[in-house]
Amino acid sequence: MTDKLIKNIQKNTEKLFNDAPEDARKVKIAVLDTGIDATHEYIKKHWKRPILGAGGCRLNDAGYLDFLTTPPSAEIVEDAFGHGTHVAGIILQLAPDAELYVARVFRSGSFDQNSEPGCAQRVAEVSNILPARGCCSALTIN
Image 1 (cartoon, rainbow, N blue to C red):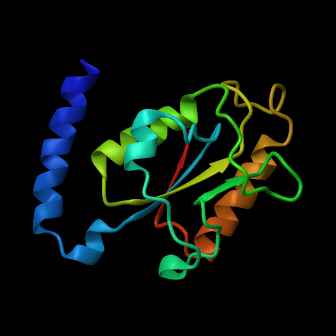
Image 2 (cartoon, rainbow, N blue to C red):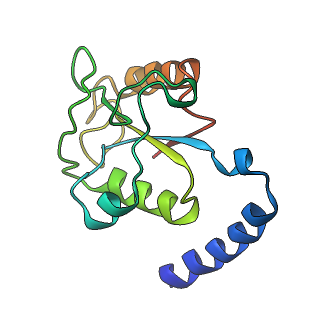
């Protein structure tokens, strides 16, 4: 079911992107989630890491920041829950030309103030930082 849905969405987005100018296809997307598993085979193959300063973004060479550390770290930590990796994979399937930025703001799959103290503050911080640095034209918070 999921594969069929993804294929249908891909087919429809390909029609839109084929008619779109080149710069319209290069959307910048930020995923605010549990991080990303950079060793995952699909992610390794398809995640074209943004270059420092590319397109005005001043994030870091990896296109990643961990907001569970103080100050935020560019070192990619294992996505123990896997949700951020899954979301990133779907985005990379549907928008292969996208510049993908990842911000780790959650530790686990429980996204509330009781199980994730400070999560609302981290999401707010990232939601302000990334667009201000030119790193995204779309945010996905999962």
